Length: 295
Image 1 (cartoon, helix red, strand yellow):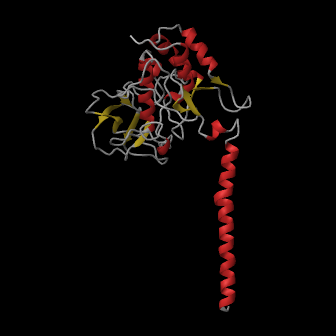
Image 2 (image 1 turned 180 degrees about the horizontal axis):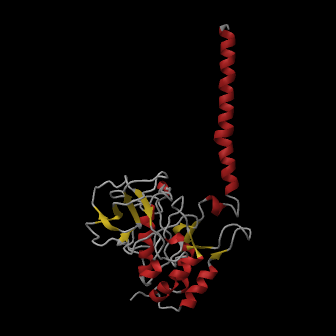
Image 3 (image 1 turned 180 degrees about the vertical axis):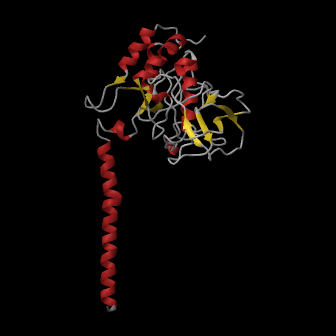
């Protein structure tokens, strides 16, 4: 290829680059932005921001915490579901805990998903003024950790321990628990765990216990969403919080429950998903209609 052809080829490539840059890098983004400013689209394009007296207080698409400066839940407000996004509902750290159903054994300074669920369930029951039975869940101990044993002994052809020689409650360390949640297992005394000991050689067995199949504390009160930013809670979790909020605001439960109904969104298209309550919008409605009088 001679120098003239080389110049023409590179010149054509440069012109194509400039034209496509103008179209895709300038004209298209400006067109999309302009369309987004049309009435009916602007609010969504700007992030579905919620304002009070001209001040942005949040987004209807992103959950937030309703806590004091020390991180304690404010009793006059409905609480959101747990969040694993940063320190809670951080849009820059959106994500899940990446723990699944098999996460049942605690690691040092890293509780399993099962223990997190158990701990949160009892904490919610305490926060709502319920007895511990209300926070009881299957596979949880009374002190709020996963009810899991390591059963050590010879195994049969199927890999199961046939004659246990030692049984340890792996999520109940002796430093904090002197009496394991279960006294004996298959005739063997259950021991509490020793800090730093490795019990993976045993067969890991989760003990269901006597908790009801449908716990009083709903699932979204004890599990984080996949994004960590879910702005909604279930109607069951909202109903569980009604009495506490009513007491804190010196209202009747019926008054608060009526606002919950007003801020409940039905299933999408009438059949997809479940009814849900936007926590921010509900709390703002409470502040507007029934300002809190703490004390």
